Image (cartoon, rainbow, N blue to C red; front, side):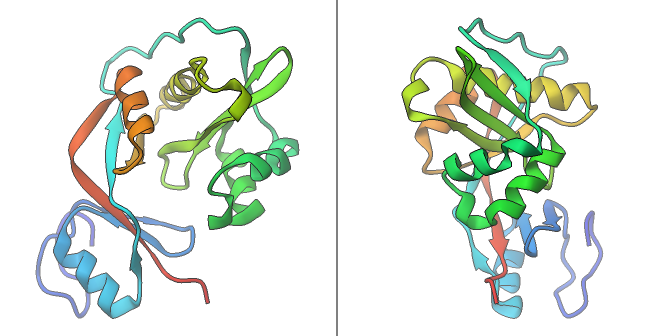
Length: 193
């Protein structure tokens, strides 16, 4: 149970630092003891560890200048996002549609879609993808900071999780002014039946 207490069949230890997601029985956390318990007892498997990144400043960030515009994306963009998001295989088009409903921004250059970002089910900023012809132009930073601004406008925490082996994304978080945790967390997922 969050904040302490016991869970049936598990040792009496604190359950602080864990999170559940309605998407495919995902559980995220930081403490090794319950990662091992959940893996063994519930048949969940461990995803690659992540770092947390968060916007801790009181004021929202300014967007850096770029040759284009940010726009909110509607459901009509879901097939495009599905076709271009590098991790679409994790939840397919239904996952992408849920993300669009939660809020996604698109970066457009000369009227053409150049990238996008959105919110995961637990509220973290993610789904960040810049299309290959538009990379190395600062669009990743623009999208990330646009999502930070959107989260703050909604009264949400502006945070994300970055796989520990994703050096470019970690560098982007730091460049954009987010604070990156020293400790890692992880996500466990129940295998598809």
